[in-house]
Image (cartoon, rainbow over all chains, first blue to last red; front, top):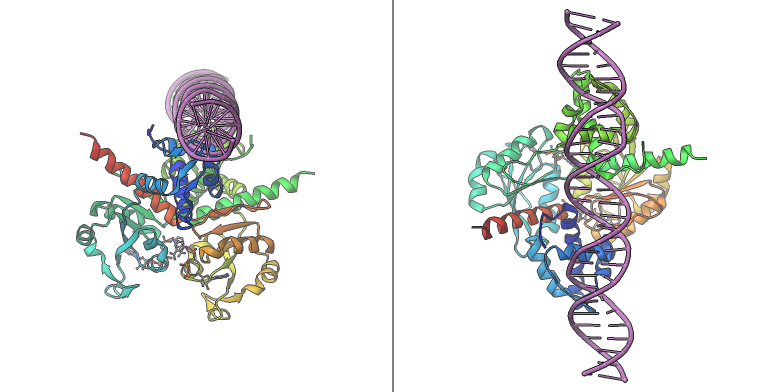
Amino acid sequence: MSGRISDSTVRRLSLYLRMLRDLERAGVEFVSSSQLAEPSGATSAQVRKDLSHFGSFGKRGRGYSVEGLVRALEGILGLSRSWRLALVGVGKIGSALLGYGGLAARGFDVVAAFDVDEAKIGTRAHGLRIRPMTELRPVIAECGAEIGVVATPTEVAAEIAAELERAGVGAILNFAPIELSEVNGVPIRTVDIVLELEGLSYLMSEAGRRTGSDA
Amino acid sequence: MSGRISDSTVRRLSLYLRMLRDLERAGVEFVSSSQLAEPSGATSAQVRKDLSHFGSFGKRGRGYSVEGLVRALEGILGLSRSWRLALVGVGKIGSALLGYGGLAARGFDVVAAFDVDEAKIGTRAHGLRIRPMTELRPVIAECGAEIGVVATPTEVAAEIAAELERAGVGAILNFAPIELSEVNGVPIRTVDIVLELEGLSYLMSEAGRRTGSDA
DNA sequence: CCGCCCTTGTGAAAGGTTTCACAAACCAAG
DNA sequence: CTTGGTTTGTGAAACCTTTCACAAGGGCGG
Ligand SMILES: NC(=O)c1ccc[n+]([C@@H]2O[C@H](COP(=O)([O-])OP(=O)(O)OC[C@H]3O[C@@H](n4cnc5c(N)ncnc54)[C@H](O)[C@@H]3O)[C@@H](O)[C@H]2O)c1
Ligand SMILES: NC(=O)c1ccc[n+]([C@@H]2O[C@H](COP(=O)([O-])OP(=O)(O)OC[C@H]3O[C@@H](n4cnc5c(N)ncnc54)[C@H](O)[C@@H]3O)[C@@H](O)[C@H]2O)c1
C-alpha cells in the first residue's frame, strides 16, 4: 500500500471525487467501482487499483459508501480544507481567473493579486485590490497563500515563478507556454493551451494521412 | 517505424519544435539531442527515440540541422499550415482567448465566435462579430473551421461539443471541467484548471504528511 | 444458519514507456 | 587515407501502468 502514486492515478481520483459529490448531492448511498469508472473513462479494475494504494474503502458485495469515499478522497487529495492562491499578472487570463466562481466553489480562493502595471495597481478586480510587485513577499507571507499562479507574459514567467517560490508558496500553477523546472521541491503545473492545440493538430494530420494514403 | 505514437511523445515533439524555432531565429545551424532535451526535461535518448518513430533526421557526429528538423516536426505535427478555430461561449475565458495573440502567432486563428446571450450577439470582440448559435452549422461549414473551442458553462458543454462535431469540426478543445467522451473519432482535449489545482493540492498534502509523520 | 449472488481487493500477466548502452556513421585534422 | 572525437539510431533491459481473473468477504432471502 501507498508507494509513489502516479500522476494519472491522482488525476483519476479527482474525477472519482467529482462524481461522488454529485452522487452525494443526489442522495445516493452506495456506488460500485464500475459506476464510478464510467465518467472518467476508466475501468472498474482501475478504480479499485487506484483506491487500493491508499487503503480499503469498500464493502464486498455492496460497493463503496458514497459519503465515506467522498471524505476519504478529500483527505487523500487534501481537499477537506481550502487553499489560498496568489495571482501574479492581472491581464486577460488573470482577470478571467479572478472572475471565475468555479475556483472558490471548489476550495481555491484567490486572496491576493499582483501586477507591475501602474495603471492597474490600486484598482479593484472582482473585489480584490491589485498590488504592486514590491508587496509580493510580505503579502504572501501575511495572508499565507499556498499556491502561486503565474499569468504574466512568457518572458518573465520563470522569474516570477522563482519569486513566488522565494515568497514561500508550496506550489505553482503556470499559464505561460514555457516549461518551468521545479526547484526546492515546489511542484509546478503548466496549463499550456497551445500545446493542447498542437496535440489536436497532430491527431487531425495523422487522421488525414491515414485516410489519404490508404486505398 | 511509426506505429501508434503516445501522447507524451507528441507533447515532447511540440516542445522540441518550440526550442528549435528559437534556435532557428538565433541563427543556430545544428543542435544535438542533448541540447534539445534540456528545456523539456527529457533525456537525449528520449529525444532520439521520439524522433526515430518518424524517421531519421540527424547526422551522426554532427546532430540535427535546425532548419531541417523544424520543417520535419512541422510536417509531423501538422503545423506547416494554419488551423481555423470556432469559439463557442464568449464569456470570461472565451474573451481572454479572443484577445490572446499567442494563438494566431502559432498558427491557430479564431475565425468565428458564437454565444446565446442576446446582449452579446452582433457586438464585436477583438474584431470578430459574435454570432447567434443558430448560425453555428452554416458558418462553420462556410469558413471551414477545423477546431471547435468550448468555453460555455459546464452544464451545456457536452451538448455544445456534440453540436460542434455535427457542424463538422475535426477536433475540440474544451475548457469546461467535465470529461467529454470523443465520438466519431473527433479527438477532444480538456483544459481542466481545477484538476491541475487538485493535483497540486495532493502533492502539497502528501509532502506535509511525509514531513509531518516522519521523525 | 445456509446458500446464492454480488463486488471488492489484489497478485500475476500483459502492455507500454523510458533508459541503457553500443555499433554505425560522420566530420575534421593530420 | 587514416585516426580520433563526437553523436546518432536502435535493440534490449528496466521500469511503470493497466488489465485480467479469481479468492475472499458481505448481505439477503429463505
Ligand atoms: N489570454 C489567453 O487566453 C491566454 C491563453 C493561454 C496562455 N496565455 C498566457 O498567459 C500569460 C498571460 O497572458 P494574457 O493574455 O493574460 O496577457 P496580458 O498581457 O493580458 O496580461 C499580462 C499581465 O501581466 C502583467 N505583467 C507583465 N510583466 C509583469 C511582471 N514582471 N510582473 C507582474 N506582472 C507583470 C501585465 O501588466 C499584464 O497585466 C501569457 O504567458 C500567455 O502566453 C494566455
Ligand atoms: N473563467 C475562468 O477563468 C475559467 C477557468 C477554468 C474553466 N472555466 C470554465 O470555462 C467555461 C466558461 O467559463 P467562463 O468563466 O468564461 O463563464 P462565463 O459565464 O463568463 O461565460 C460563458 C459564456 O457562454 C455563453 N453561453 C451560455 N450558454 C450557452 C450556450 N448554450 N451556447 C452558447 N453559449 C452559451 C454565455 O452567454 C457566456 O457568454 C466554464 O465551463 C468554466 O467552468 C473558466
